[in-house]
Image 1 (cartoon, rainbow, N blue to C red):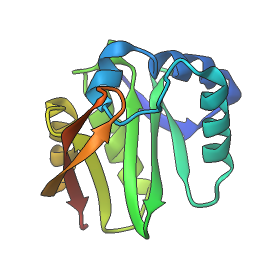
Image 2: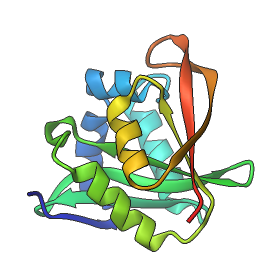
Image 3: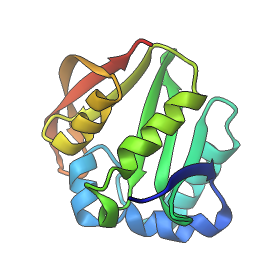
Image 4: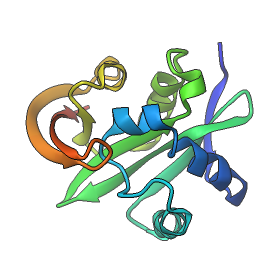
Length: 158
């Protein structure tokens, strides 16, 4: 089993994160991503904004000391939402579930919301195992698929 931990995002993580967020399969599954995942300048600006914001919590996810992705929370219209990105090489090994459990132990805001493409069964499973419940769906434009798709909205109350 991979020993998962969370820490602050470091400058040395950014090249690996940029490559992870360009991987076509996770991009398709995440669906709601940057307009151009290959635009490094836009990526760097976005990450710099995330890392400097007082309203955003962003953590690196590590496994056995190796950078495996990020997890964070942010606010949209007053609601706290969670997001994560885990390297595809460790999908199905419990990394996302463990990272989410660790993150939820540090973030006290409730309710906490999450969103996932409705066909992203892996992410929906991770969220529901952590106690999130489905509260609805909506259709939205997903730039990674260049189409409007259904998105599932979940909430964690406790």
